[in-house]
Length: 205
Image 1 (cartoon, rainbow, N blue to C red):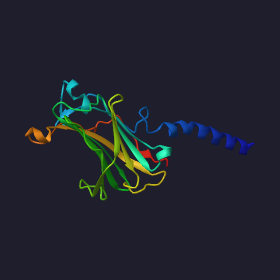
Image 2: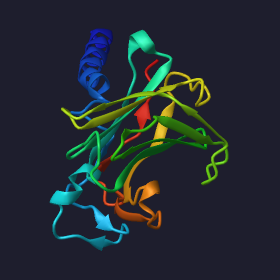
Image 3: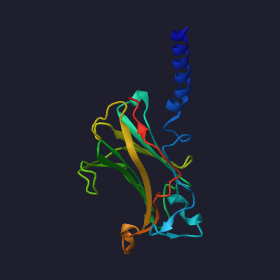
Image 4: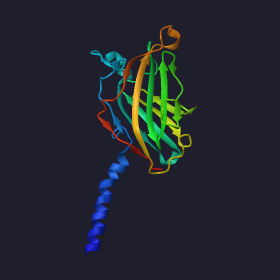
């Protein structure tokens, strides 16, 4: 009887844990959630009128994998109102994270000429100097306002199943374009130090 109760409790525990495992890493259950309407001048000064900065306003970020493409790690960033072309300023979208004490960064530039390359970089000593980079696959979906980078796991060191992707941290910058003749400085930023939710992502494959 005692053995049957133990098996039954383990069964119930497994059922309770299953939705948590199945629902992680998607738009409904992101690893990172940011407050809306918090784009700031130079990342410091609040701006009362936020309508002009919707394409820099972070909503959420998450990671996921697909069993059919288990050699890739997908990183998604949702923006309040994503645009395939900006009108004047260049928009820079960034997500970085840490695994095994190494830092990885994906980024994308969108400006008046359109969408740039999807890029992933790595720093093997967790500093601001990147040791290597590559162009990866990705998508910009203006219907869902989601940018997704598809990163080969080989580039990030082939982390095994169960590895924890830590310190997931998205950022956005708006700056003058290279051909504007104006200083290339980050004018408007969404630096989500005021995040509403942060979780690590655990690899499934």
